[in-house]
Image: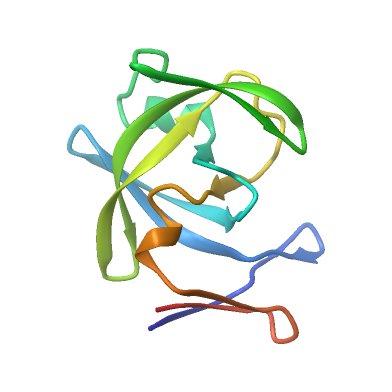
Length: 127
């Protein structure tokens, strides 16, 4: 079991955890909000550039609808590390993303863990 405290971001607490993305023998550590409303994970396009990924070059392009509207998302399969677990995960990048947070969505992430949100104590448990 891995436990994380919600970090405070701009005066609010979010169910966000540290995530390491790996590609092209590079890795970056980022914070991502766990989002059950997102089908795939969505990260800032600058993260793709840091990893040496031309994010628009992919066979999987999706039109996704979310809270911030409709997005054209370029999906890649990357290695993700959370705690001591590493697994492949679908990660999307978009030119149209307007949210300020990276998001961990259902596909590739949720099936790897039993996720418990403890909103009262601002904690996340991953089993």
